[in-house]
Length: 239
Image (cartoon, rainbow, N blue to C red):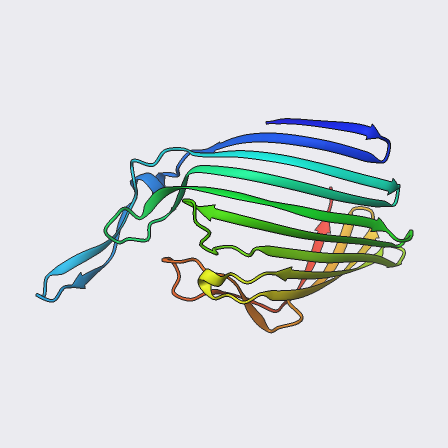
């Protein structure tokens, strides 16, 4: 990849980047052969339902083009804007036809942008907000496979020495192809650092709903993936 930036004046930074990436197909994608069941036809003949790899798969290729701008009018406040265009070639996906191999290669493109801002409101309080939009196309068509808009607002506040409260609000747009509605999620965290090398955290996720749908893996799982409300405790020690 290549990245370049230019600072015309002290408060503004312009940058551009190009990245090229490759991924070799996994062995299971090329050479697997697994029969899950046998299906009985009208005449009573049994037909194997077999998961097949595709030995003709080539390496996946990605070309990504990005441009951006950063404005920092004050040391405690920044605004970032980024635009991108990505080209995917020979991307490996699950095949939609049982008559073919279980994996196929497609071409896709995605373009979009993101604007974000960070504000250190005080010595104890930090705010971050971001809004992103993306429009993917698969073989030249928009199949509505991904959310078009997402945004989030995050706040961290130091309640007292070594104790931080985190508040996180996320929004994900609907996915029409899978009939998944838009979702707004609220998470909270409380972190305590009794020593420099020890951190204890209490987390609560998905507080607005007991559960919600976030994604659906077509042809692999019969039901959409549900994300439930969760609470958990973490302990981290650095050596």
